[in-house]
Amino acid sequence: MPSHEVIYFDAAGRAETVRICLSIAKADWKDTRFAGEDWSTIKLTTPLGSVPILKIDGVDHVQSTALARYAGRLAGLYPEDPLEGLVVDEVIESLNE
Image (tube, rainbow, N blue to C red):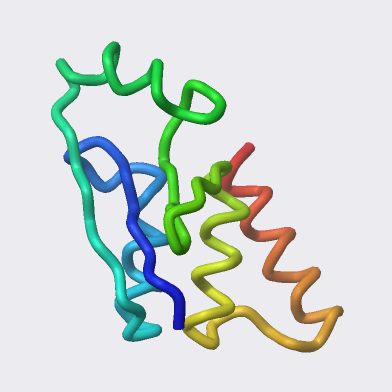
């Protein structure tokens, strides 16, 4: 399994689902948190000027919902069946709205 690093504020927020799923998956991962006052400096180094970031084997990936789906798949929490996946996606997107 690849190595993972979650980079986010020292809070649950949009990274918490990814953290939980990586833990359930027993993935090799690092939890990198930073203080709010460090954000203005860190923001300049992020791919889209936002977090969370999930580094997979050193490559940055962004967008919290996409990261959660990936981590959910690793943990076996995202269904294989396309219709069941649609229902999960409906719930995820409803929560985002």
